[in-house]
Image (cartoon, rainbow, N blue to C red):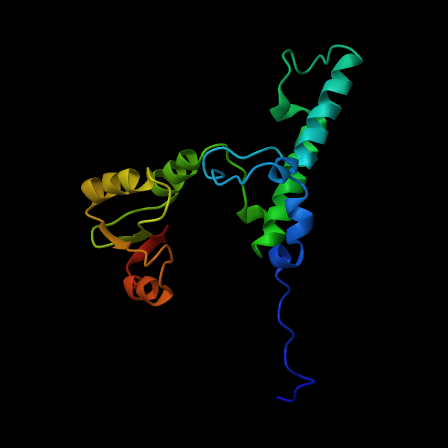
Length: 176
């Protein structure tokens, strides 16, 4: 294959737009915020949608929403789907493969206990740097279904990719 025919690398949407994305979170101008797995600071797009919602409320009662409920409001519903589409682009996924969830443990329980069918001999690979409560959920499937748990240890705060790859095999059902 000639240089002219070589495939162009896919753009890294996160790296290419890092400053723009970071600019969506005004509080990062004042904080170094490392707790995004627990509670995230609001983005400008979300704050604008909330402002639109309350401006809409000033016009009068919305008959289909008896209480102010951001989950079903037309402005915030649009922001929800826009966030899913943007997230899908960032991680190179189809929007149908992305959801927005409020809590990490909600997602963990959904995936581990509801979306996967476990069998004895299956295994789950995780690291010692993931969200602290995830291993407790994994212990539940280990105890109920005979699933092997494989923990890949960090080295100076990094997960060695070769160690992660070595832990994964044909019986790996989940990598956390």
